[in-house]
Amino acid sequence: MSRSITMPFKSSGEGDRTGRGIVVIAVLVVMLVAACLLSLGLGPTGVGLADLWAYMTGRGDALSVQERVILEAVRLPRTALGLVVGAGLAVSGAMMQGLFRNPLADPGIVGVTTGASLFAIMAIVLGNGILAPVSFWLGPEFLPLMAFCGGLINTWILYAISTRQGQTSTTTLILSGIAISALSMALIGLLVTMADDRQLRDITFWQLGSLGGATMPRVWSVLPFTLSVIVIMPFVARGLDALMLGDAAAYHMGVPVQKLKRVIIVAVAAACGATVAVTGSIGFVGIIVPHLLRIAMGPSHRFLLPGSALGGGVLLLVADSVARTIAAPAELPIGVVTALFGAPVFLFLLIGRNSGTRDMG
Image (cartoon, rainbow, N blue to C red; front, side):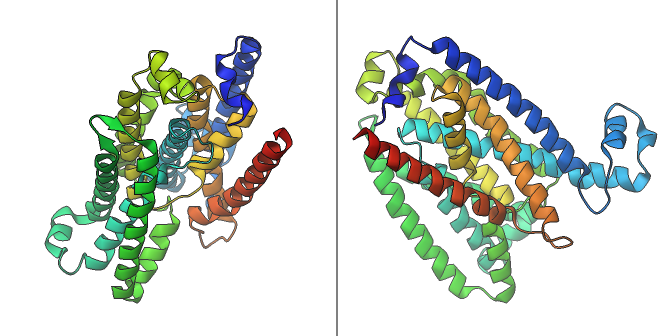
């Protein structure tokens, strides 16, 4: 473990880190406002910044009827969904990295993503078969609800396996997550072989992720689960800092380690399950954003968690703007854009981290 892990508990330079954290968060707020304006104004029917500002400040005549309909029915829900999903994924990633004391950890490590994917693909493939009555009863919410349930079921199974006598083993949780994810992927492969051409296209598009189906009801449906990780940020920040020294050290510092683990795992499962259910699988947001911010502002979760919420919104809105324009009039799945950006950055950070470890050795 690198020496920077223990920095939050040293007194020297605390003011410098605090100032740097405040500056980074202020910059992220400005970037988020710019990303929102870009998302709202970008598209085949362009809306100028001046007209957009006039509309937002109450001048209804600033836009034509068509522009207002496009803005209110299409772009505003899409922007809001990007903010909510990006914040939820990035904060979940930051919490999981702190919980496992590994800056390369990901929310998918607890099986949320694969569980949600398995149940969503079950909805696509079996929705007109044995699950037809449920599909008819739930209507358009059938697939999102199935995905959400899949994420929670996988997380519950993993937590039950890794918890004995009230103690949750992180190592057992990780290994169980690998096994359950492998089983889920095998079942996904079985469902794919059963799918017809239309279902295969739906599966492929869903697995790559998209904000294209954004509506305000969907935003409201995922918002409470994202708020679950946002609300607990100030209550878990100190505990996550303490966990950097290990479970035993955190316990002796007065941190209720097992309760902290349970709260974070449940909140992350709910947030990631809900976001995957609404937008499909969007990778690398939960890894890249916290990792870059840790470099920019240090490892203290007091600033890292709110910074991740802002940075996740910025990244997803910018990626969505690129997805809508780079191949216009067609639209790329947003998961393709985040992977094209995230994978090289992830490899660069990983190589740099390994080089730093060798240098210290």
